[in-house]
Image (tube, rainbow, N blue to C red; front, side, top):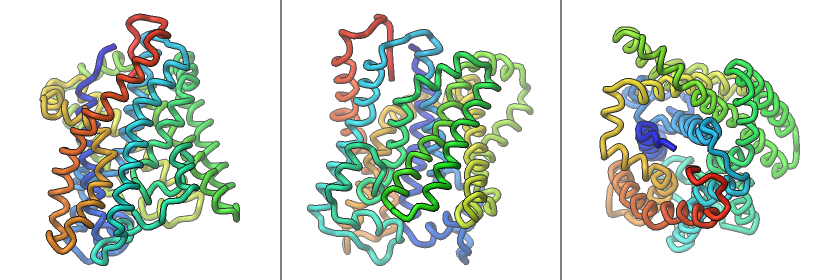
Length: 400
């Protein structure tokens, strides 16, 4: 099955934007900016509410990851490269779960070894990491992907909880995508995922038992994020049709489209009021504004995918060896950088200025991610394939 290095490179760049986002919101003024609070710092205002925000658009990057997962996972079904469900699940497990649980163990070890959990100069977002002693509840949650206290040990793992859950049901998603046209596939997907999300959110909002409420809320967002997997799968199904029409566009149309894609991708920061409603409105207003923001992001992502796959200038840049390698280690970058951030701040306390973390965390994350890719991620992928090779039903089947 063809590997789309252009999209791998996009994932790598998106992972870097997550690193930048987390470095910046470690400082109170940037956290206030992303919380849509009133701030008096003109430079931060510009960095937050302008197209520059694309360089530290962390949430947007996660939506891109979900859409891209739907695209990649769908290809084996669209190309009729079927495998047994057990093979699919085993390989997906080793692809995601083993590096994920490795990052959890490393974070737990450093948390215990450093015995640090506070920095007066940094934000509440930063200080709420490594702030709760690890206990049995957290251990069970991490092992079973229940979604409790992910921010405390490794803040990015909340998205992996949804990634793995959705992966388990993705073959059912493809039944719908393969059977129906794009409109019906999206309509049915929208009705099921958004209705489930809204109902479960409403229930969790009104429960008094916090643990049960958080559990239901977590699964409600699994339903919600499934929609972006569906969008990725629909795009993959019609990728050749889209490419045909795209190639008919002139340079002016393409220029306007790429501008539109970038604006859609950062729509929350071009129109910050809708982001304010997402955080501070009523339940219904929060849910509606969240969907509007994320749906517009996903449309921007799909347009970026179209350019990446079908426009030579984009393709040439994204297939550069540096970007391809960045794409390869992007999952490891995503996993290790919060741990590097915490370790750097506490290990260099009173030695280096805090604002140097932006440079050093980025550099160290890339370096450590390269090691993790080589010694954890790549071997775990190979192990998953080795464990299932005798059960593969078609010799040319590849599952990423």
